[in-house]
Structure formats: structure tokens, C-alpha cells
Length: 275
Image (tube, rainbow, N blue to C red; front, side, top):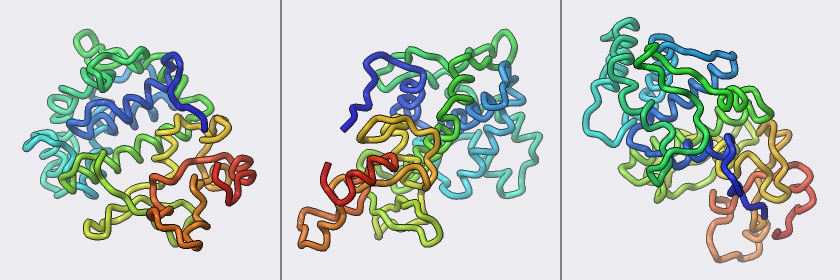
């Protein structure tokens, strides 16, 4: 199986490190990440805080409708403003003003900090708040947002966000959340669910979540995915699911621990055999 740890830091690797392992005190990192990718795809360079605040607050408002707990802190005046907008008690202009004043206080400073407290090698924006009241997107961000995996990165951010907010909503650390896997009735993707006693609506497509952990590559040959749609990428059981019909007694093979993403060629070649 391919090793997914880059020998030397790359922009792609550093971005995924931020999304997977950056400090999760609040979900602001995910909201900012989604907005950065969208701005980069539109070839924006400098973005004022006023312009940044609109999609940034909108992303958080949408997630608050699904899971109210978006931070480990007891209180957040910024999130309270987002909740007030959702309830119709605050208008858009006042939310944007609150976002500019309060919503960026920590996330811009901490975005590039890795899990060991050190900055990642590649930066995706320059903090120009003091000189221009905004941020400047870097060439590394523009390359990510317009490269071969441009369609993959936003889905990975969304998948990780759904995973973390679910863990917070259950008052559990994200690394200890246990997941069952169930097929969706309308589409081919499999969706992550919390255990039955904590049942809630689907969290995210497993392809998106797995892609982030595999650095957007096939688990077997290492080929880079340019899309993670159902026709190009397979969700493979590392230990073949067929064993469940043969008195397998070592646990449910249709769970997230036994899944990887594989390209069509590798998945077809592996078939029902262990790798």
C-alpha cells in the first residue's frame, strides 16, 4: 500500500495537514479553508475583510443549522451573531460587521499552525490586515485551487468539518468517534454515521473524507485523483466484504476502518482478494 507521507513538504501536503490536524478549537478553520479555495478558483489575489466576511459567515451559518456546536468554547459572540441571523433576529449587514470585528481574530493567526505548534512550510495567504485590512492569497493557494485536484480539495474540507462538528455535538473527541457505514438509497457513495444510539442525519460522503487522509491518491498505485466522483474512484474493502458471508468473526468489515479509495483499475484487479 502506498505511503501517504510526503518525503518533503508540498503545498498539497501542507494544506491537507492543516485541514486534518490543525488546531480544532472552533470550526472557523474549515470555513476559511472553503472560502480560500473558492476565491483562489476565481483567481482572486487580495481580499478585504469585508469581502471575506460574506462567504465566511455564510458557511458557518449553514453548518449551524445542522450542528449548533461549532466550537469547544462555552461562548462565542461571533457564533451568537450567526445564530441570530439564522433566527431572523439580525440582518446581513450587522452580521458582516460583527464578522469583521470578531470572526477573524484567531483563525487568520492560527490557520498555518500545525499540530506541533510550528507553522507549515507553505503559506496560502499573507496577513495584510494591518496594512490593507485584508489578506493576500499566495501562488500556492492559487495553484491548489486551479490544479488537477481543484474539485477534490473543497470536498475534503467539508468532509473533515462534518466529522469534527459531529464529534463536538456528541461531546466526544473526534479521534474516538466510532462510525458505522451505510449505503445511501439514491447514490452509490457510502455515508458516515455516528453509532445507532447517537443517530443523526448523514455526515458526509466517505469518498471525500478518505481522500483527505490519502492525500488524494489511490491507496494501491498512488495515482492522483482529479475527481472523486463515483465513476472514477471506488471505495474498496481492504479486507474483502465477501468474508462476512463466510463466518468472519473479527468485526464488521463494512466500516470506515476497512475502507480505502482506489482507482478503477486497481479496484478491478484486486476484486475480492486481500491486497
